[in-house]
Image (cartoon, rainbow over all chains, first blue to last red; front, top):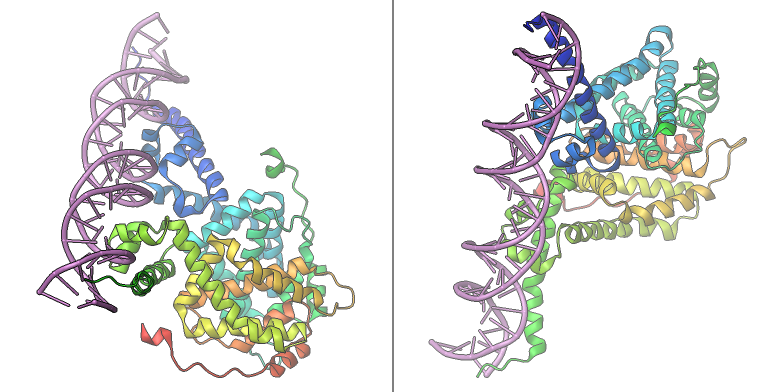
Length: 219
Length: 219
DNA sequence: TCTCATATTGACTATTTAGTCGAATTGACT
DNA sequence: AGTCAATTCGACTAAATAGTCAATATGAGA
């Protein structure tokens, strides 16, 4: 008699489930990197994932749920990327610069990630809200220049705008020989730091260990 | 006998044609302002325009052609907006600032235009190419700062990124109390001008006569 | 090898969308 | 009022897409 422990049963299933679910999310990311999120169909996804249509609906209620899952994964990667800087850096300008550089490094290392991240912010603004809010707080803590004319709200849009455009460009293969520090400097100057201050912030930025595994090379 | 001059016949038709075609383009713009270009269907358009489906295909081969027509109209409005500055201003920084301010003024006056313009650049990069190219040329003509680290290619993405984000924000109703000059200053500082230089450029910017008719108010 | 809970499959129906076409409407002119 | 070329209409077919479900496959443990 094969009366297996039901808890064990569920465990076995979870592995298989997780693998298939992962394939679907991977397929979605691959498609989102190539075309508009709104133009991707369930049939596209299952074809790309090499999975039957019914399977899709076992894992997700519909495209919206899949999109949310991709967004969730992105937010996860954002948080992991930004966490180290948030805890260790006390200077808001330095925190902003660190966050931006982390994004750029990731985008330089994995252009698919860049393309997906850029597309998802437009499609599901919900996911990016936390990152926006934290950036906004950092911008508010920035020492205000003499006669401050640039509101924190505007600075927020400026930083987000530059970063998104860089992500889009890298995602499309443009700007592949990008100078990270030049971008950070431009952002810092845009939000009111002087050229010298900006340069100084960039120089004080802690060096990050270069990643070993390259996703871009693997694909 | 009603044997009308065939040339006259065609003339009569053209008016009716033009009106219907205009309704379709208007409907498309209205939809593009609300949702992703890729998610708009022919049925959406004809419903919004209050026109039968068959009529749509009399005027356009398909959605792509309609989208191209909307893009064409946008490019037209860009050119009209940017032309005065291009011919009268010799300082590249001034030309860039003027162009950006023209965009912002238009967006401030007509948030639908802003939303559509932002969405269309992503959907049909073809249309924006000329504007991009002209901006790039202006950026190249900019006097190079001491040890130039920011390439013209990067500056291009920075300016475009900021402008697109401002357009998106205004299109979504955010930043409605926007300080035009603050945006221009931020852009100029980002591309390498000092804070004082940027301020000076903004002050030297010729004043434009405020528009009488407000599209935003009319809708 | 057999069992069986779980996961996967793909054919199926229902709905949405693209695109067509003959019939009806329009409106300036006679 | 009548004419007629141009335009518009909307029902129609074909194709694409969403979502369902009974049948099949999987694989660890007995």
